[in-house]
Amino acid sequence: MKKRFYIILIILSALIITAEGVAAYYFYKHPVKETVTEIISNKNYVSTKSDADLEYLQLDQIQKHPKNLSDVYVTGWIPDYDIPNGLATLKEQSSVFKGVSPVWFYAQEDGSLKETLYSNGPELTNFASEKNFDLVPSIALFDAPTFSKVLNSEDLINTHVSNIVNMTVDNNYKGIDLDYEALYLADKDKFFDFLKKLSDQLHSKSKILSFTVLPKWGDNIDYPALAQTRRVEDYKRIADLSDEFRVMTYEFSGRKSPLAGPLAPLKWMEYTIKYMINLGIPRDKILLGVPTYSYDWSERPLAADDLDLINWYDVIKQNSNPSLEDGVAYFNKQINQVRNNYDLTETFNDAWGEVIGRYNFKGTNRIIVFPNEESFKLRKQLAADYGIKGITYWRIGGEDGLKLQ
Image (cartoon, rainbow, N blue to C red; front, side, top):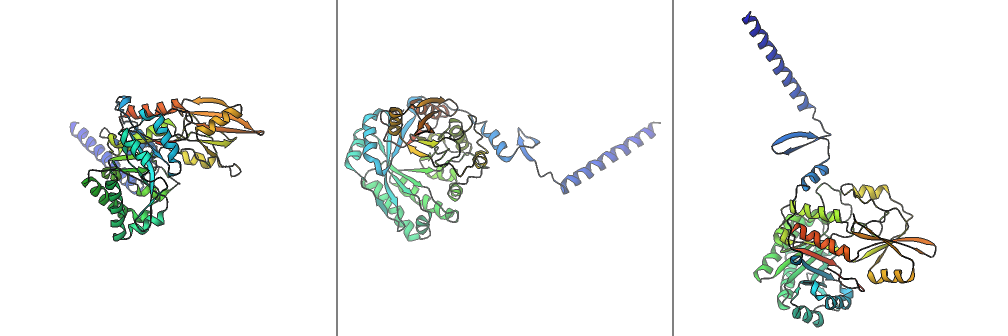
């Protein structure tokens, strides 16, 4: 009887093993393509979530690392066309700032630096020195073909690097900021060769390198605007070569947006910070871009309070309306003019951290989304909460009574 029992048991075991083998072979030949496998706590499981969803689950694990609000470093850019107004703000609100970056130069195709009307202006230079501000001027570039010519010539690269280093040393800047917003993907390797050479030479002279990048908040998001530049901008590689890593966290809703939405919503800024930290970028290098401008649009739907960051560009496409006119960029001076001349109703959107204003202009309803002083406080607090280096305003100047933080 026992012998028969063991024989039956052996046969059943063999059948089970055979069935498992057949199943394994079937799934090997017919993999499930609609799912993603993620390893968490050394356990495998199959999820129907997208790669982007899984990435955001990982970002949600990033912890805050609070520091004192007073330790948040504050700087900002002054555009070349409005240096006088930027300087006026610095003088009126000097206690706010620890640094300043006037846009004083533009990169040229021969490797030279084109100066502007106010480049190295003594009034700003002397004031920065008097207040002990870190003077880190910006070099701007918005034309990929121009820089491609430089990157594809060893002589021009050397010329460009020498011009930057000599300008920085000769004028005793703290360092230099590169705002190179147009790059070809084909030039990526040469771009990093250039950046490495520049970084080494600046550091040999005890000068800092700041680099300004386009905003990214995930590896699995299809960014339609300046797509090649974003693919060149490997955040971690740039941060490894830089002393300051500035991210332009503004223009979430742009001039052509079919939705009236925030320019720099708090949720978006927070996930951009988490994304950078998750890549391994040191918190003490990160500077969060904070807008001081706004957009005034004709009447259109409002964006949701709880923004879909992963699918934001799909949301924009779904709401596309070619008949809508482009928005108009305002600064606080223009918003005050609207307040003085029209019945402007203002509602602070807590989710966005920005104000939604409505008024009627010649029988047409209009919407303005703009920052106020509470907006600046919230963004500075966000920087403190995550222990990053600080914030950088785009832009300084034109506040017309609005206090920066």
